[in-house]
Image (tube, rainbow, N blue to C red):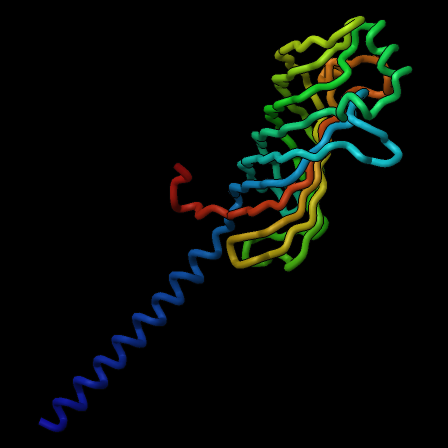
Length: 240
């Protein structure tokens, strides 16, 4: 009987050891396949460089919330390509911000004195990483990345124009292209997750987003800074 219990104990111990070894072996084998696809979500504050948004030298543009969702895929250890869908609110300064002389010029040219914009944007953008990695397990704790791409922006705006004795409100929907320029710093939170600080400037092809044309030298450029959470996807599981 004593030998029976000793034999049973040794068999149980051996079986447990084999299961643990097998689990570690399967996990190691699984991580050999790089997680090249990722999803990310970001939230932050944005503003717009425009004709009626404020002083460029003081950078006192009104800030409003924005968010984005991204699907990306790594094609090289230093390169990924991502598709971004986002929303951002922007607005101009109040009526009292600019001098009566400027307001009179805008009134005579039928330009908007104030604007409120709801921007929906979609772009595709390749990103280059300072530190490359062949596998998600070999990512550096800190990385720096940046890139530029092409996108489409739809603007649902409300503008205020000045008449001789009063003001009038106008609503409009605009569609324009833009070049997104993005830069970020990411931190490896765990094996499958990064947290990043990310900034984007959208160099649009339009000067009409704020309803005011020609007061500044350049077109209207929305910009946003975000906190981003990125999750690398299991290649053996479906995304949806």
